[in-house]
Image (cartoon, rainbow, N blue to C red):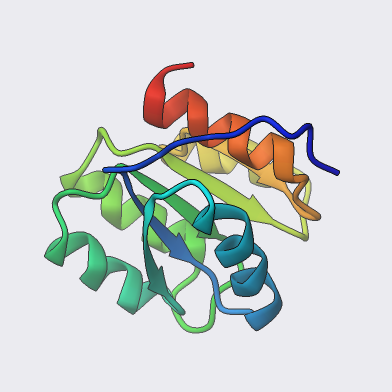
Length: 131
């Protein structure tokens, strides 16, 4: 359920690293109304390629459970060259200690699935606009 608050992330670029079609449809529907530019990666290799190609990424939504390279490896690799971009980790399967590991590797925030729309938008708002 949504509070009805509107968010304007125009001129912001969000990289979504997610391999499931259902989640990608959710993010597309949730974020298209914010006017943000959305970049997509279906796996870790694509995510690293997008980060290398687009220095203008303002936030990353990173799933932990990806085919091939795990979200943990993606997070660790991005943080070698970019310590500033907010990386919001999201996963449906939270194992003991996983959240702490994400923060140790450099995650900015952590969201558990199923993701609530207001929580997602509020979290992005905090890191994109400082509100």
